[in-house]
Length: 127
Image (cartoon, rainbow, N blue to C red; front, side):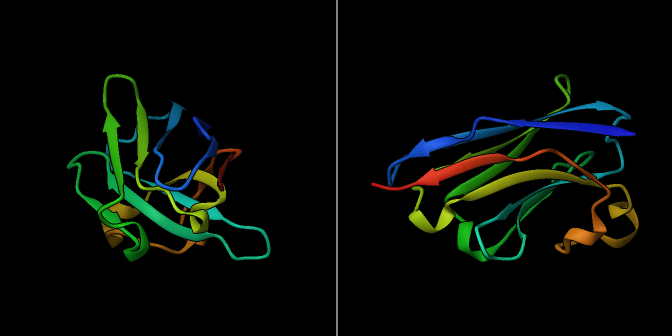
C-alpha cells in the first residue's frame, strides 16, 4: 500500500507561483511513476505531469509545458509540482497519484491507470 498526502495549495493571482508537494509513505516508488492530475468544477480529471521515480524522466500536458515543473526528492520520498505563471484556467483540485505499472507501459495519462491517490489540494487562481 501507498499513502499519499498533498500540500501547498492555496490562492494565487495570475502570474504568481505555487509549489505543491506530495508526501508518500508505505511502499517505495522505485519502479513507479508519480503523476499530478487536476479536476476543475464540472470537468473530468485531467493529467498534468508525471515523473518516473528511478530515472527522473518527466512528461507534461501541453497546457503546462514551460510553466510547471515536476521533480522528486528520493531522500524525502516526495514529489513536487512547481507551478509558475499561473493562469485562472489552472484553478482546480490537484491530486498526486502513483502508477505502479509504468515500468511496463511507459507514461500513462488516464486516471484509471493510477492505483493510489491523495486527497487533493485546492489551487485557486484569480485576481
